[in-house]
Image 1 (cartoon, rainbow, N blue to C red):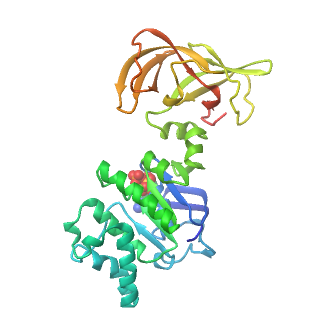
Image 2 (image 1 turned 90 degrees about the horizontal axis):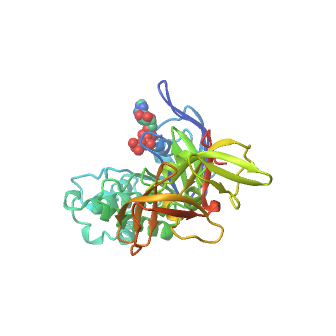
Image 3 (image 1 turned 90 degrees about the vertical axis):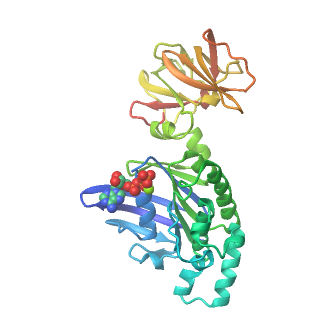
Length: 360
Ligand SMILES: Nc1ncnc2c1ncn2[C@@H]1O[C@H](COP(=O)(O)OP(=O)(O)OP(=O)(O)O)[C@@H](O)[C@H]1O
Ligand SMILES: [Mg+2]
């Protein structure tokens, strides 16, 4: 187990600056997910921690050591990639032991570590098989096992589940979480899948354009996104947004929806006091909107156009203030289609963003 400290690093590919002045402090034993769209710099950051890419500036510390200029093999890390990269001619056992044999670890110790890793990852029945005789999920477990036997302080994963089908992905996701709970090793996991991020992470670093947009618990990322990018990137279906203006009347603050009503924002925790008549957008998640009134809820007139039954709930697509929005209801709810209705939500659960996209 080791902490990781990324201090003001800069990474360039020739003239192209991928990361600039990036800081990240990861506690020992934490499960951190780097989440962001394709090309945002997730793999670059992970590879820099691993030592596979040099930094142009800044420092990387693992535990008490400045490893910025250390070789990957000296950093006490294990890395697992999207492609399993197993040796095809070796058995599972051979794949697991290869690195240890090269490092001159004693035979008895190698056997002990392989037995333990195989048990944790449930690959004991396959030790004598070759990679081609395994399913994708089993192969990925072997790849994880190769890092596991090395007894490292930090695990780095670059989209290890994205080559697997949906069912296997879910299974292995649960196993990774169990693995982390069992080992308590520091883990950094790259994905562009928000469900993976929300379910696995102690904290998520949401990245875009080489910049960490928010570094918070899954709950805070989901409920209190720092900016419009995070709000839009996390959540499916996406958060609903209404354009409008923040209006102040004496001590109370409201939000005048463009082409709609003025909503009382009583109960909304402003990050900073907004200026009057500031243009803004109000975001509210589909599951936070209800068709029935509750204490202190605000309301908007709407029309439901379409219903999507999802099994465990129903997704309704509606129009309110000329804006398309979605909301969730119970699966047995009888939906009034194409009639004027009211939708309700709590202002305290909403997210307001200023014109620059920052949370208000
Ligand atoms: N060796 C390289 N030479 C030049 N540019 C590179 C190199 N590697 C990555 N890049 C660029 O750096 C940016 C970040 O790449 P990176 O691989 O870190 O993205 P990512 O977030 O991992 O994306 P993905 O989800 O697609 O894997 C991209 O614009 C990419 O084109
Ligand atoms: Mg990548």
